[in-house]
Figure 1 (spheres, rainbow, N blue to C red):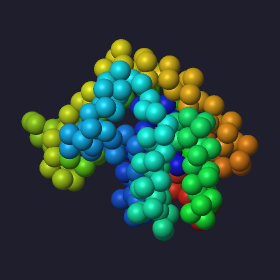
Figure 2: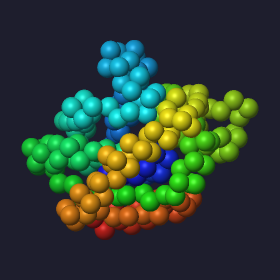
Figure 3: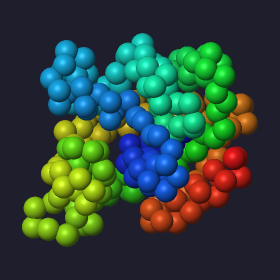
Figure 4: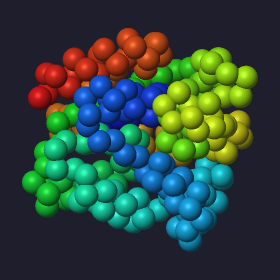
Length: 212
């Protein structure tokens, strides 16, 4: 799993992992944004929470993850930004035990507040496939287009500066304790996330190959 603050690069690294290794990746955020785009009641309800910067209730998130694991988790998996609270982590441990699936790594991407601010202020995401990039990198067309599916690259609604401050407060209060949780399990590995994506990915690749 990939853990870290908003803007730490979890989505970018998750995408690089799945493209390089062919391992299925999921994030609660991606699932819920898909529900929002489909206009489902769940999508509408959780979109309102996301716009405020609030975390979605644990029960909803855990249910989505267990459904996803049942369908896709048979040959390895990567979680992008899940779990986000200690109760979610405890529920995940129970789910993995039921599925007889061990957790090999919990990789924490350490980033500075300046890195977070810089990345969030320029972040673009594909509305179709979820590919994440930055405005400075999306120079391949006058209108930013995803290089993988030709979908439009747009700003996320939860990347507003005021919402970001609320998300960071939520992260510090509810997600930061997961570092101790996974340290005690012996699964935590920390990686400097302030660098270029290729340097970070090289470290992730080494950790994954060591854990295989």
